[in-house]
Length: 358
Image (tube, rainbow, N blue to C red):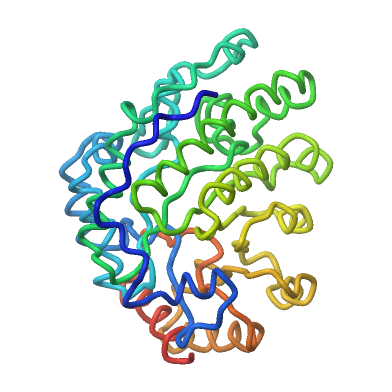
């Protein structure tokens, strides 16, 4: 894929922060206070997020409004006290530049109007002009950075190629990913073409996020756990590793986080991707992972449903996590995204417990 035309980095792109604990931990340094953030932290559990969201009947229109993106991006920093902001966006914003029409329907989630059903269409997928078609994402980064000042880092992100491909082929959410896995097993060369194109676009997209001010990059390959070890290693691993290598080659100082949900059997492969940090879901025993990979920085992995417990119970669970981590650098987080009906006070209790027990 031709490189997206590099655009100049913002005039003000501070790399020194009042609170750099997350960057320290991601780079293997022990911060004075343990860092914590929450996947989907800019979300429906916050009343102010719901207020802004209500302005946009169309979810993608919300994502395409940089001013409102910046507003909700910084809400959890101000209201929950997390140690990083994550850009509010969606992994499927890459689909329109590649010729797929996607909309988000109430109670159904994302629906792709023209899912990939033909090998020739996959071969002819356009790369897209990321600078013009996703300029609203990059403006959202610039505005978020301005609003944050130098308080905490900003996390940029994209979906992993397998996860994004699942929506492109299935046409939406799926319990089995049968169409995508059928493509993988019956026509692996076509599957490889699709994953390769997505990896190239994703690499360009993430590096442009860094140019515009993102301080950390997260690759969320949420559905990688649908694959067995052989299929992941042979057909997905090389492309994800290439994305990470591309980022590190251009921006060696920018930490890269890789996260997958429901994939404990793939942890040995994730550990070889070259990511600075591996995000773990709650199905993985954190102590086992720490012992198996003594040099790896991890993120996670409290069960999101643990936040239904009382603040006192949440604090006890954080204490148990900290006992497992011991003296290692670690980024505290949930094992998946926060649920929309979690009381904000409970999210704050999680963050406060991490900070107070440091």
